[in-house]
Structure formats: C-alpha cells, structure tokens
Length: 112
Image 1 (cartoon, rainbow, N blue to C red):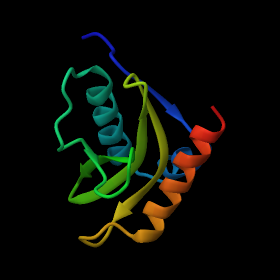
Image 2 (cartoon, helix red, strand yellow; image 1 turned 180 degrees about the vertical axis):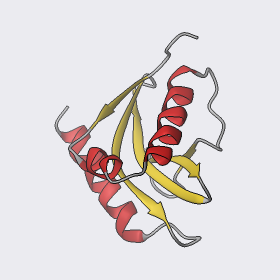
Image 3 (tube, rainbow, N blue to C red; image 1 turned 60 degrees about the vertical axis):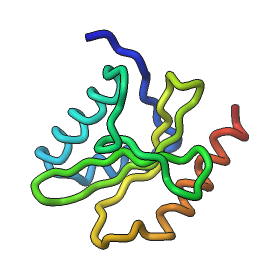
Image 4 (tube, helix red, strand yellow; image 1 turned 120 degrees about the vertical axis):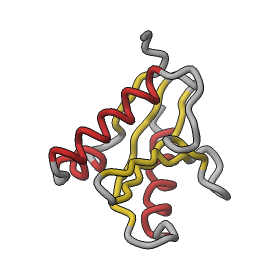
C-alpha cells in the first residue's frame, strides 16, 4: 500500500500526549495514523472536520473503551500537521482543547 500523506508534528504537544499513553493506546494511534496516511479516502470514523473551525480536523481514536482526539490540519492535502491530543471524557469536546488547537494552527501557518 502506497503512502499518500505524511504526518508532521508542530511543537511537542502531540509527542507529550503520546508519551503518556499505554502501549495499547499507542498501538491504536499508530494504526489510525497508518490508515490515514495510506487510504485514498479517509472515513469520518478516523478523521473529521471540526464544525465552525475553518481548516481544523480531529483524528479520532477509540481504544479499549476510551476515546482520544488529536487535532490537526491538512497542508496541501498531502501533509497532516499534528497539534494537541487528549482523552475525551465528555460528549462535548472541551473548548480549551479547541482553542489551543486553533492557536497552534494559526502559529503553524504564520511560521510557513
């Protein structure tokens, strides 16, 4: 299977989040990353646009009954830029996490 997209990190937010996860959660995150970098069409089950946030997406990971979200943006449709990640504990995504991701996305585009 050919790789169609590349994943890059902006800052160390995602790396810090990833380091805190269990082996099983890391395995599932890695699986989702492989899928979204290699699949021609990515289902909303794995990658979804954030309503009301232009250009911001969430990578969706379900592992062992827990829900995780990783914010990102797409740069030239071939690069997935990762921002912050968190474990989702409530039905609504915390505003604080969205605000951080939006700020990081603006910083990313300002530094290009």
